Length: 321
Image (cartoon, rainbow, N blue to C red; front, side, top):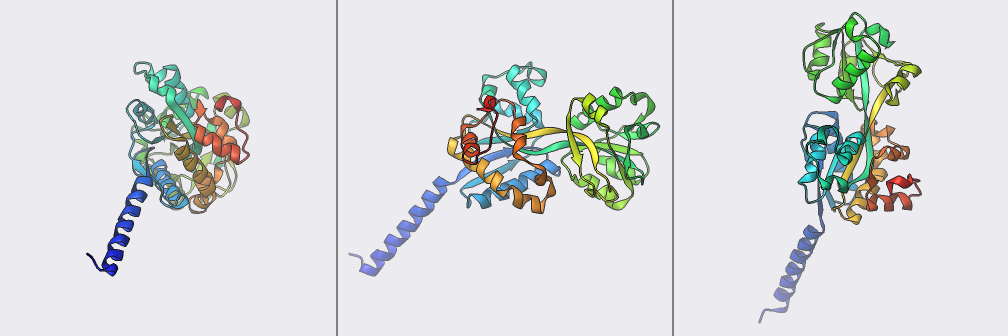
């Protein structure tokens, strides 16, 4: 028979192992898919992951996965079985639900299981020009060589705007990827570039810090004509830009599926909103998120998210319930 002290020690060790096992079982792992590494949206994922870890005392762990874009994020709903959170403009969810656009040939009943959680910083249009005026009009782009990129939301939106306002025939479109925009502008290879990201976006910060740049500000009529949401980039966001810049943006939402438990969806939503101010202190792009943006969600909210909004006294549209 073991001496009492050894018996006590063995019992304590067994209890510790048991507690550790229970803790491991209690830990909830969530896959988070947003964008490719090196982008602003991937960095947001890093920041959100840390906020969730802190806000849940490590009980919910967000694991980042690289993505090739929002269409892929939505497509993966067809195969994902576990806790899956992804970001996308709500319009793509609408397309998936109705079997249109990129989802016309690849429809799935699982798209009906998509559920909203909370908004993240919007994709904001930036027209960046090598100029020291600070703020320019869209018409000032005439006669310039502009890099708009290809194959991205920003490129499609830039081409749409330039065509809509009769500028495509009066500019020269540079043949290069949008990632080379800042360097090409600094080297004088182009006179402007267009980028779509949250603000303040790192590539514009870097460019404005190294050379004089201006941003194009759209008129009220132009914003209305685009049909996109108005977005104000506050004065002082970028070096040398001392006036507010009026542009457009595309909402982006964090979604999950109905397979996520109500408790997990609740914890993710609660922690996001409770840590948002702390995140904004480190990265200003979180500061623009408001409860009003919940109304941008397409489809329905996850019941766990609804529980948080109801507890917090946040009004949500009836069609999201």
